[in-house]
Structures are given as C-alpha cells and as structure tokens.
Length: 155
Image 1 (cartoon, rainbow, N blue to C red):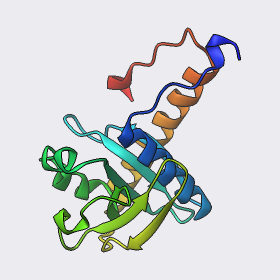
Image 2: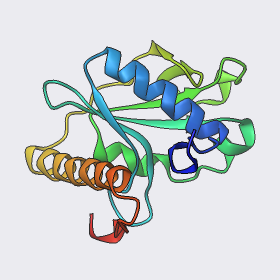
Image 3: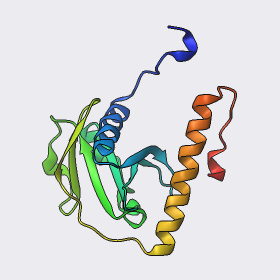
Image 4: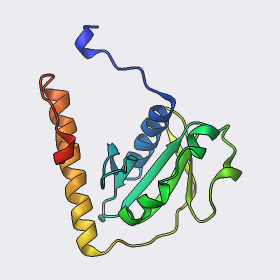
C-alpha cells in the first residue's frame, strides 16, 4: 500500500469514536469527530439525525480519562442528547446518572441507555448544524487534498 494511503494508528478513544460513528450510521445518523462547538470545548463525536436531532458522545477509554474530564457538562447546551461511550470493561458505575450510555469498540457500538432529551432552541440548532456542515466539509477536503491546511479556528 502506498505511504499516502496508510491509515494512521488510532488512540483508544479514537477507536471508540470510530465504533460509535459506525453505529450512528446504522441508525441513519451522520457523525463528525473532534468538533469544536465553542472555544475550550471539543466534542469527541457529534451525530446529526435524519430529523435534525443532535447527539454528543464523549468517548472515555479509561477511568483516568474520565476523571480528567472536567468540562463535559459544557457539552449539554450543544445537543439534544448526551452520551458516554466506553469499552466493555469500563466501570460504568463511575458515569453520572441522567446521561446516555454506549458500549463500544473499534468496530461497532450499542446504546444501553438513552440520554435524556433536552431540545435545542431553533437558533442554537441552526448554528450547530452550520458548524457541523463546515467541519464535515473541511475534513472531506483535507482527505481529498493532502496539501490542504484546515484553519479550524474559522470553522
């Protein structure tokens, strides 16, 4: 395989995100990874449903990874539903009540608990969908054009 076509080595959280994204697609959702909805926040997976619903999934590969996350509540105002995605060996008792739960690996995922629905205001939904679309377009262009330099601060 030519060097420019080799897949990068994925970190544990990225493998969970890939499995989550594959599962979201099976639910007719499309997803992007590492979207920045606001300065200081970076969502692991944002999924957009066929009716415009927006789900955020935070992927945690270990107890230490979870304990280091002090900003997850900031993601709640950017989605209709919030989920944690963890591996099958993760101690799910650590996760806060009232949040969604997905068990994932690098190849697929399963929703064990739906996150409660808190619908976004129409103006916020429009802004999030625009960020989602621009993020997806920038990522697609970067794949097609190896010389492309994305300026993520202007997404």
